[in-house]
Structures are given as structure tokens and as C-alpha cells.
Amino acid sequence: MLYDVAHHTLHYLNATAFFILSRCDGQRRTEDIADELLAQHGSPTSDPDVHTRILSDVRGGLAELASNGLLEPDDGMPA
Image 1: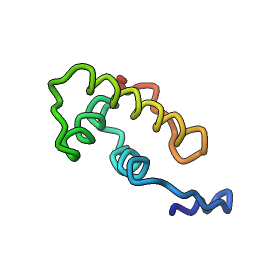
Image 2: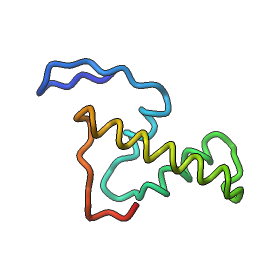
Image 3: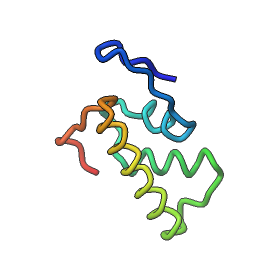
């Protein structure tokens, strides 16, 4: 759970959403987060289909977090 003090809203995050949010430090690229997620689950990062799917999922997760006001996109960071 994550409480948004500014909007007095409680957000329930699944483990993947929490993982993604916890990696958003302004230094990691979207691909870095996808690679870390793959590594955590023991998936091969060399399989291009798996990597593409996970990267797409991470992008979707970031968009969802941003749409809920939990994350401000950094337009200066490469995807």
C-alpha cells in the first residue's frame, strides 16, 4: 500500500508495480528497470522476445504509476 498525502488517497500496488516504483530514482532508464526485473525472476535477458515483452510491461507500469500521480515522468531520461 502507498498513501498519497497530497491527495489523501491509498494506492494498492502489486509486487511488480512496487518493484518498478522503487527503482525510479532518476538514474535508471526504463530498460535498466526491465533488466533488473528479468534478473530478479531468473529470466534470460538475452531472449529478445522476453525482453521486449518485459520492457513493454515496465513502460505500461510506469505510465500507470504516472497516471495515478505516483510518478512524474522525466522527459530528459532516455527510455
